[in-house]
Length: 200
Image (cartoon, rainbow, N blue to C red; front, top):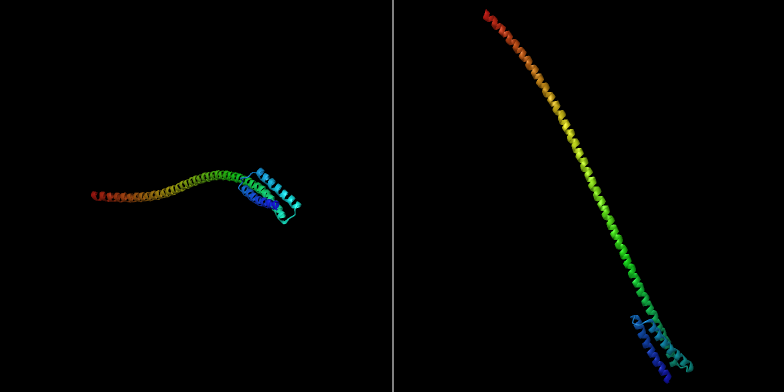
């Protein structure tokens, strides 16, 4: 009876030890070697429980031996938990490194695209200024051409008007000259008549 009680107490202690090991492994306060040592201690107690059960196969000894074996499995699972947490932390660190590299690549690409966009905009501005200058030059040439054509038309009209006026003046001069000739002949005739009258 005393042996069964001892193994029952060992089973209760194994449960507490397994729970504490799992808790400490979950918060990463227990190293792998410490977990292995606890697993060895609980495993040795479970082995002793099975030996006691083999020597005196009672129900209480079987429960204690099975419980201690379960405690060993729990302690070993704490080791697996610790490894999983370590692996998860390593994966998180790798993911962080990948994220940082990705951020750097994105930033580099954004900077490069921004520089390319600035160059494209500068080229577009230069092209627009060049096109504007060409348009201004073309408009200036068009204005000069139109002004020249307008001046030429005005000159032709002025020449035509002057020619017309000159023709009118010449016509009037010819008409006046004819009038003067007639008046001179009339005066000459009158003078001759007057001279004849005076003689008579």
